[in-house]
Length: 120
Image (cartoon, rainbow, N blue to C red; front, top):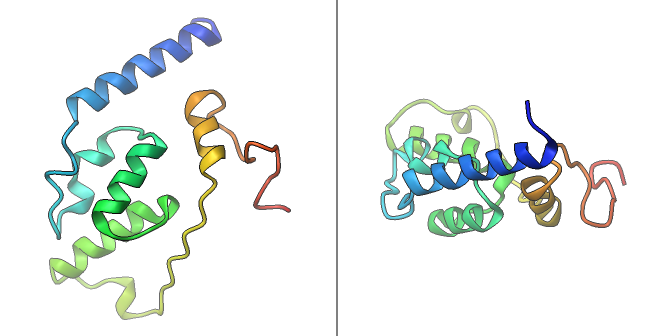
């Protein structure tokens, strides 16, 4: 177990390694196979999340995997929760807090102004 700085470098190196290995995910997106995308192999930056969302023409990074999974199931003619319930995907994005969690504090709940958006 190393210092905080060493752990951060290790995590950043691993992330870069993963991003290099699983690059090109946008070009390989295919309806019915979103959750199998190389996108989900790595912890992604906010820029990459928005790139993925833009490619899908949907919104909301916090709902991204669930929505992708549901789209896959619909295209593959599998039963989904959408057939049983009225589902509403509401994009709520704390992008500055997400960036903080990527760059320093992975357990960040608050935005950049230290406001917990779930409580205030």
